[in-house]
Length: 258
Image 1 (cartoon, rainbow, N blue to C red):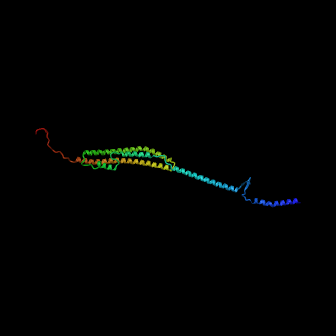
Image 2 (tube, one colour; image 1 turned 90 degrees about the horizontal axis):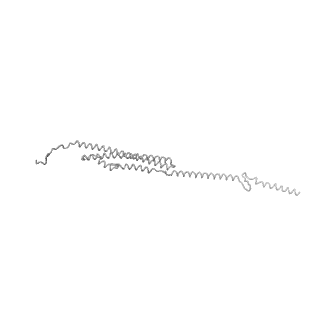
Image 3 (cartoon, helix red, strand yellow; image 1 turned 90 degrees about the vertical axis):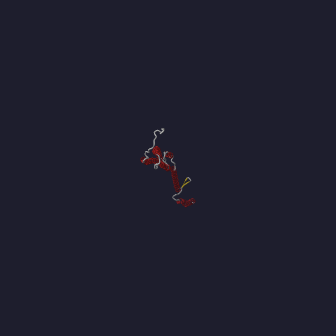
């Protein structure tokens, strides 16, 4: 009987303790932690950590992309600021100097306003009525020499400009090639500026030719005008009556006694 009472009390105590032991397990939420070998795994915390890591990785990727864009921008800026490794300035200056030297070698009446005024006053002005025939011939010859010299100077300038054509062709080809192969905006601009300088040099050559031709034509026209004026003076002298024949005493034999 005692044994049966003891077993009854134990069973009753076990039944009373069972609900208390099962209460924590029944109250655990859906995201409960699971333990394996002493390691606790929380699915909710794990998912949050994965999401945080993904966001951090995306931020790092964005930063890397931004740095790459900035690096490319710096590279492009460096290209845009790079100088053109070619210059045609020396060749263009030499062409201009050759043309200037030809102009400075103008004969007799050069490209100087004061000298031109002085020479025209002396040689191309009104013919003096008191000048001798020899002086008239000398002035006419001097004017003819000026005209011939002007024509020669014009042809020399033309020859010099023609000689510059080959140099200009070479420079133009080189500059166009540099412009097409430019790596940045600055190089393209510098190549374009040098092409403009080449065009300016060609315009300077054209101006020199026009000036030389105009000088030669002006001298020729001035010579013709002066020759016409001198012709009128010589015709006047030819038509002006002279003193005529004046009779005088002549001695046939100056040593005779008569």
